[in-house]
Length: 255
Length: 134
Image (cartoon, rainbow over all chains, first blue to last red; front, top):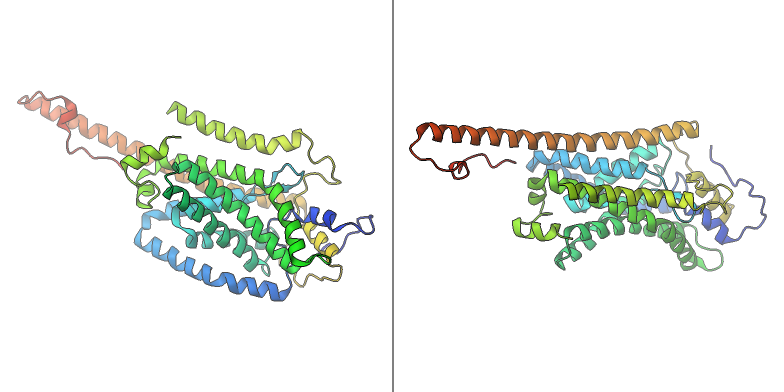
């Protein structure tokens, strides 16, 4: 069932070569975090998801009309995390699509939508896993949305145009997810020589190179969807505080 | 409107270029298995870093082949794309419906004020209470 140490025919391959192959993973595979790590990340993630479920039910109760847009945000994550795209390093990875929902509905709700996506992939696709769900939720559904949302707020406060803020929010949400995955892997599998920091440096640098073009793609796709939303759902975006008022709206639309 | 469409097309074009360029430039040629994207690769990688590591849990369900797996990934993308398309289609339909209703209402108002004949005001000012849309 699990391919245990397929012979690479290279005897003692350097750790760099080994890590070079790890970068292709987006979510940590089933059973590949030691139980203590798996439980710890699960415990760390649970409160965010519980809080997210509460925010989600409150949002739906208070604004039933937002259900559609909630569905669309979840659908965006579904599409993007199914798209395995080739990257400049010669391997494939996929975006996360969590930036959009974080901007629209704030990160707690995105924690739920991201968890649903991860569950779907863990149960049906054997991509990610149930034991590593906590760790993957933490990186993709919690840290990613919060980092993206933080960047979005800072840029908006600094009078950045809406689409610029949206691009960098999605970019950072994507990239930070991978950074957290690197940390999680480095914690679980420290480099025999240089320890946690050494492993983190290697994981981090490798992840970053592969993921930067994909994060750019994700940013552009999020901008595209946001442009369509601005055109089609002006009222709802105003209620959610993405579009502020008539004056700022014009300003935000200008490149 | 037209400029909007152009910008959207350009965005898609750049995304497509970002995906295609690595393939065209052969950036995966130095690999045994170029553009692989499987978790299995990472699994073997970790078992190589820590040869003693035993995965202590295996997936409850695993797609029996790469074809089935890609079918399920396609299903995931299709589900998402379907919901997104439904959303935007619904929005567009509602907007058009509201516009049509607004136009009909203002036309009715104009007709009514024209029939009265008391005030030949331009139609623009004769529709203060026309539905604002949304």
